[in-house]
Image (cartoon, rainbow, N blue to C red):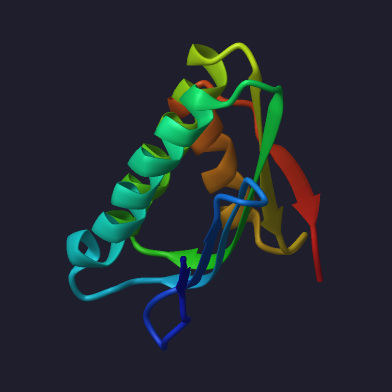
Length: 129
């Protein structure tokens, strides 16, 4: 599933074959629920695939957001908690979350740390220019 980036919405790539999730760009949609519900629905289907897997799998998730509003932050947290549950519930699944940030953007780094604290899920912080 690919959602193309717009002026107010991020590029999202959800690839169940590669066990890869990507959020890139700005997230400030007018109707945040309508925008993120297909993502949440896809994650539910993906969770079933992970549950049914017979071999160990690693899920890689990259958050390359440059800005998000408070409404989007709720969905980012929901997604992190969802992925954490997959990591904890299924012993054969490992989830790795990469949080990309500009080294000069202290707010984005702090947001990642807040998400980490709220979700209880360890994030990998990666600086990008």
